Amino acid sequence: MLVNCVAYTHGQKLSDISVEDISEYLKRPDCFVWVALQDPGAAELAAIQGEFGLHELAVEDAQHGHQRPKLDEYGDSFFICMHLIESLGDHLRTGELAMFVGPQYLVSVRRDADQGFAEVRRRCEHEPELMRHGPGFVLYALMDTVVDRYVPVLEGLMDEFEGVETRIFGGHTTREQIEQVYSLKQKLMVLDHAVVPLIEVAGKLHGGRVPAPCAGLPDYFRDVYDHLLRLKQAIDNLRDMLTTAISVNLSLITLQETEFTKQLAAYAALVAVPTAIAGVYGMNFRNMPELDWIYGYPMALGLMIGIDLYLVYRFRKANWL
Image (cartoon, rainbow, N blue to C red; front, top):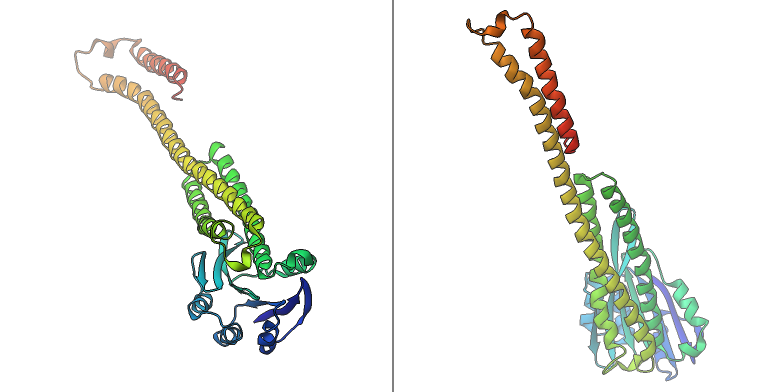
């Protein structure tokens, strides 16, 4: 659906306009149009394409979605795709923000995401001096907001990791912990797939041959680029910690199994000694002198108990029991 269609001139909002009137406003050299769409159908996109003359390949990408973050140039205009990531309970949902940027227009297409960009429009309209830069500044404001929304997602993953880490070192080294760590790695990969390709996109907007709509804003896009680099570093650090947590968890499980095996061996030894003694004296050979000895039975019991007590002392000293 159409969220907004607004014309601006000299950094000030001119008016809300209809899609059919867009081409008329584009004839004004000091005017640009900002259109926001949410989950548009093919007919809506076709109407927008007709008004702005958008490239058919870019329109196809925006319509079908599932694009890797990228920047494609088509003459004096270009197409940018970004991932929108939202936390929904125990999983992350990935949407897309596709943007068509030209000298006198910016068209944003949001798909599979609930959180909109109304606050971005209000922020831009309250900064007319910056809005004089036209679609380039609007592009910066949208990119900056998307990147800023990655931060709480990453912080949520870090908090989740700290909880898992506490349970691991608290003695709860179970299969469930490994599954939770792998689930965290999958979520982190979703965020990584959104951030890493976008670093290259942001780099093209502030260094080298910059597209014309962004030519006067290198410092702003460099700021986005720096934020992305910091996010990438934090993602790499968390990934390393997750890998270490998996190794530690597996080591602790192995250690627990070793301790359990020691305990079983110790108990087996405690049972084996009385069994051996009882086996010897249970053979009932006729020429065994202890069979007729009045103290034979107490001596056998005392020997069993004495040896077992000595073994218990040694096993506890060795931390086997």
